[in-house]
Amino acid sequence: MLTVVIFASWLPAAEATPTERGTAPNLNDFQLRPATNQDELLDRVTKLDTKLSKLGVKNILEQANRHGEPSTSLETCNSDATARRTLSSVSYCFNASDSGKIGGEVEWMPQGVTTVGDAKTDQYWNTKQPILISWYDKKPTTPTNTDADKIKGARVTFFDPETAKYQHVLLVYPFINSFGNVSYMSLRTTQKEGYDSLHAGGIAWYGNYLYVADTARGFRVFDMRYIFDLKEAKNGDIIDKNQIGYNNGKYYAHGY
Image 1 (spheres, rainbow, N blue to C red):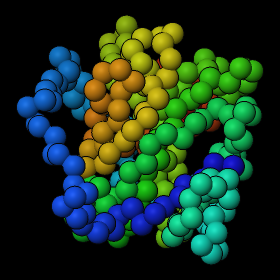
Image 2 (tube, rainbow, N blue to C red; image 1 turned 180 degrees about the vertical axis):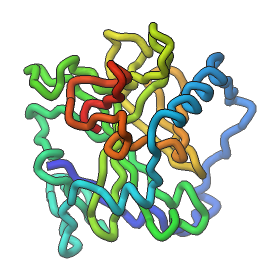
Image 3 (tube, rainbow, N blue to C red; image 1 turned 45 degrees about the vertical axis):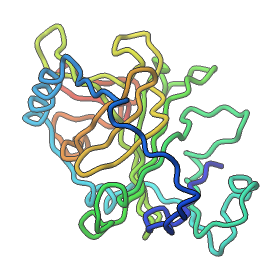
Image 4 (cartoon, rainbow, N blue to C red; image 1 turned 30 degrees about the vertical axis):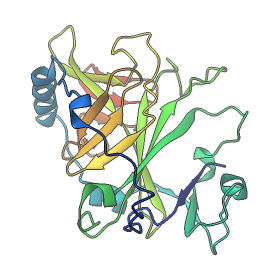
């Protein structure tokens, strides 16, 4: 069973004593180089915005289609998740369809965690205090009818600790297809067919942006104001789990 264990992560920590403080990093040691196709990517997102409905973070949490299992005490809902720790304030386990066992056949593997406490000073997004968890598609050794190309990329779970409800959102890379239509594909280590899923091993939510670690090249940036809702879109399809992107007048996202 996969577990999210929260150690009051959005509360301020006690200040370290002088002997505990490390040397601050030198900003001159870091160089930020925007992607050369940044303007093109932004233009593609703008084009998608004219084609699809959007959904805000608060509405995602209120309409979430899954429900986790919160712990009923200081004991975690999955003791294996905290076997080497003695303290926890609360824990949540995902439902059965999202759970797995180490060494078992697991499609999605959890990776990074960030909270609204990273994003905003008041630690609230509207009236909510969301937790975000990233996952990558692990490519099951046995093909299934819900994993046709076995490369779904990365997704982010929006989790509401107040209700334990959550919703998965697929991260995608926008492009213009051969017919001139704006489309998108799953996140890959290189954005071409045949490359593996991006691991999304670390994430940070800051302001309106979600920063996702790239496997080998810095990080990807996603605007939280552009979360598209295929369920409400007249040209969206959330039934077909095998397709992604624009095809024959409809937008798909592996069922997300």
